Each structure stands twice: as structure tokens, then as C-alpha cells.
Amino acid sequence: MQEEELKKKERNEHRNYPPLLKIYPIENYQIDKKEKLDKLKHQTFGYQMDQLKISVEKNHVPRTSVYGVILVHKNNFPHLLVLQSNLSMDLKDEIHLVGGRLKIGEDDPVEGLKRKLRKKMSMEYITHYEIGELLGTFYRIEYDKNLYPYIPVHVSQVKEIINIYMIHLVEKCDFKIFDTDKLSSIPLFALHNNFEKYNITLCSIPTLVSRYLMIYG
Image (cartoon, rainbow, N blue to C red; front, side, top):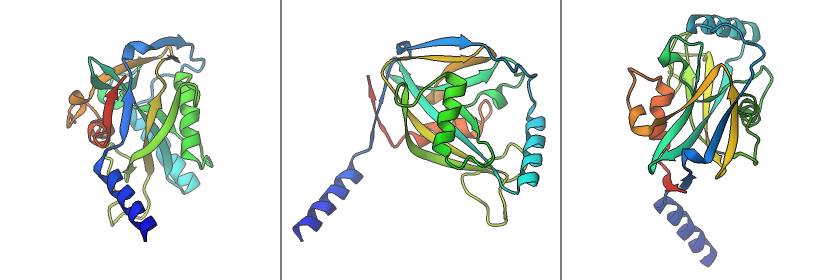
């Protein structure tokens, strides 16, 4: 009986206090460039959706994409790190979280996210970061820009599943991004409900991370 009471007390304590998230100044991170060997022309959103349709119809499974939320702070206010292609002409479509689509048969989304972070930012697990909680999932039900945080009842198969994870950076490290990309930081207040400028996944980040009590290192 006493053991059960202790467990109940522990559960209540967890409910009463938010999880902690420690983030560090953006000045702690050095950003370098690396050459991208396969410098293809920028792919329009329409082309990307055409490729998604080909993949779904060929493999009979939705595409899975994984992205990481990487936070730093400027003047003790959280900023989100995002990538943008220098080849892009459409700001709204091409500012995005770090990550990307998994390969067909790549069943572990966490391992897939590690691969994407290694490829796009030369980040190594443990050395540079740890992967935390699954913050949220979005679904693409048609070959368009609309994403939903649920699957509508009339939809039998979604086209894409997008998982978003929290990334916990170490205190100091170096990144290397492709010379065709630009790494930017956006304050959370600029993202909140700003659907005219940013896509729904970016606009959702302030809400998704509101569960944390942020500690500024």
C-alpha cells in the first residue's frame, strides 16, 4: 500500500512540473560550409508532389518524413534553426526544419533522422546532439500543401506522414551545411500563427514546445 502511494505521489509530481529544456546562445555554434556534389536545379513544389505521387502509387505506402526542432537563444529568447535553399524562389515553401524523407524500407524514424542530420549539417549523435520526444505528427492526405494533425475519417490512405522530434543540442559544437543552403534562426514569436509567411509545421512549433520550461544556458 505504501509503495502504491509513493508511485501515485511521483505521478502527481510529474504532472505538476513541466519538463526542462536547456538551450544555449547561438554564438556557441560555428556554422561552416561544405560542397554539395549533386547540385541539381531547384525542384518546384509541383515537381515534388509529382514525385510523391509516383512513390505512393509504386510502393503502396505513404512516404514518411522526419524533422528535428533545434532551438537556440538570442538575448534569452528561443529561436528556431531552419534551413533554406539558396536556389529557391518561394520563401514559404523552402524554409523548413532540418530533416527530410526516409528511404523506402527505412523503418526506424529516429535512425532516419540521424542520417538526415549527418547529411545536411554534419551532426553526429551524442557528439553534437540527442534526439528527444516526438513532438507531433502531421499528415498529407492529398498531393497538395495542406497538412493535418489528424487523419480525416473519409481518408483511407494518407500520402505522407511527417514526424517532428525535439533535438537537444550540446552546449557548443560546429555545423557544416551545404553551400547551396542557408541556416537561419527565427524567433518563436515570429512563427506563431504566421501562416502568410511560413508553412503549418513551422507555425506549429511555438505550440509544440510550449510544454517545456526553457532554461537559458
